[in-house]
Image 1: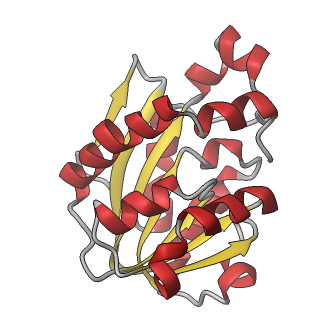
Image 2 (image 1 turned 90 degrees about the vertical axis):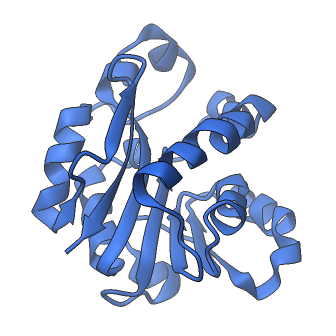
Length: 203
């Protein structure tokens, strides 16, 4: 599901970039470690700021970056031009990385989700796809907005999200082991349980 104009402005704002750089990325790195030399996919890359963090903060060697919105992919392509062939881009769906990048089972060392899966109506399919493309021992880094936050008037009035079958933090965490993704205690919630950040390892 594409973001509306209000959410597009928010996710491309300096405040959002500040939050990702100074809080989200460091916390995920503490929970799951860096990814030096890794081949990584980012689902819902948007304008490419998260992709930049994956390269610079996490140390990935290469990133496949996918987004539903062609305009976002073009913004990301411009932002990341200096990285050359370390980044590949595709307009595509996070539930079908085979179509986007011809990604076979066990293609990637890590999958990154900076707040995208809550936009996907079939969110369980996105989790399953993340697990499918991970190598054994590969890590799924996630930062998500839960049903608790989506029920708040601010979210309902300003942003467009699927309204059925949204997940709580507990429901998202419970889905992971169904796809051989193990978190142990490597997760945190913020602002009550509005936001969920964590890392799961594929077995």
